Length: 413
Ligand SMILES: Cc1cc2nc3c(=O)[nH]c(=O)nc-3n(C[C@H](O)[C@H](O)[C@H](O)COP(=O)(O)OP(=O)(O)OC[C@H]3O[C@@H](n4cnc5c(N)ncnc54)[C@H](O)[C@@H]3O)c2cc1C
Image 1 (cartoon, rainbow, N blue to C red):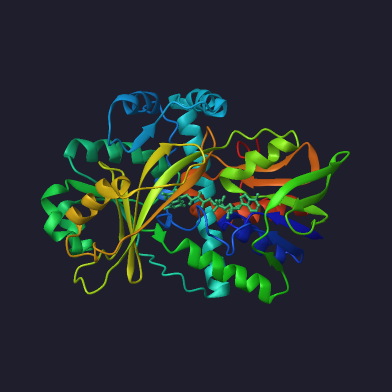
Image 2: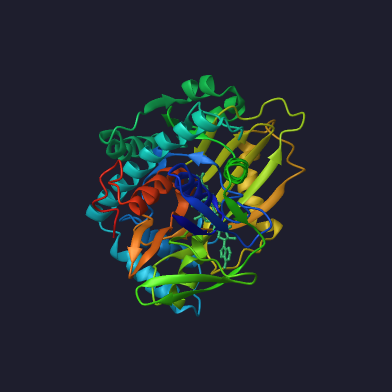
């Protein structure tokens, strides 16, 4: 078949790759001059099944309420005139029961673990250099109480096959000596040895180059303006350049998917949740992080990509605004400098903000809606790099009419 993929983030590109592997002729459309130029550019790069917990948990409503009055919270919720924010928030709150949080987390973990297995296959086949670090991720806590709660919490993922080791502060420093000077600030942590990290944009761009080398088309600098339908099918995709026709179409526009979908009467409960990141060269600093970590108290994630570190934080409801100012990064930079004082050249930071495409239950949308040749692969939220590879394979299987390799009950909604 000829298949048109809408969107050149990690989800769109991995989907085009899997479709091409199945023998299809693929054309991908992306508005930026390069793929992975929006959310898939600046994320923490964590392939983190060990962080599959959904945000829609019983604790979330109170955290949301607190964020209305407290400043400097990891979560920033502001009132807005956008009615979609309230519809989404209501649906999100409906997912916050203990039973739903447990169910959604296990579904997410199933997808994330499968996705990591698919990624490993792609890495083996393609030998892409993307500053991969497969030494695991340490999720650390600053008090014994928080660590004990974290270990209890983690039992859910453990029961689903996630490998974990509980480490005290000495063991954490033995694992990553760059944390030695911050040892007293850390009570201990949960180490997920099978989690990993890598630069998502480097990976996505290299994969796109492979697609093109094998005859696929990546149309960058092309903005999709609409979708034309006839009867129960997409007829063509309209852009600011030429129109694109295919036998099937995949919608993978991240946070922008609902904007286009709405024009053809498909409502997708995906809302942008802004996050911030810093990319900092290590320069000649002697003690850069050797593995990735998440400071669970401050909700700051730190990854090492070769000669750089990437620091991410914050969930903010600011609509589609990706602007940022230095003050937005002060807290995360302070936390990183405190943990790794000799870890990077903190005078040379690159600032970035992007939008997580969040669904209320934190699970992506797959499969068809209304139109028989339009397939969704979108709404991957806060761990979309982690879930992209498996989601791409699943989408290719659904298009081929094959049964995906993992049970899809609860994932096809
Ligand atoms: C601060 C932060 C940290 C994160 N950390 C992690 C992490 O450590 N691990 C992890 O797994 N995930 C992480 N994520 C989440 C992850 O980045 C996203 O889930 C993932 O990048 C979503 O990919 P996507 O392809 O769906 O969206 P995008 O990357 O946004 O791609 C969508 C593409 O569609 C294009 N597009 C939109 N509209 C149009 C149009 N009209 N015409 C043409 N093209 C269009 C856009 O330009 C864009 O390139 C993080 C996110 C943030 C914000």
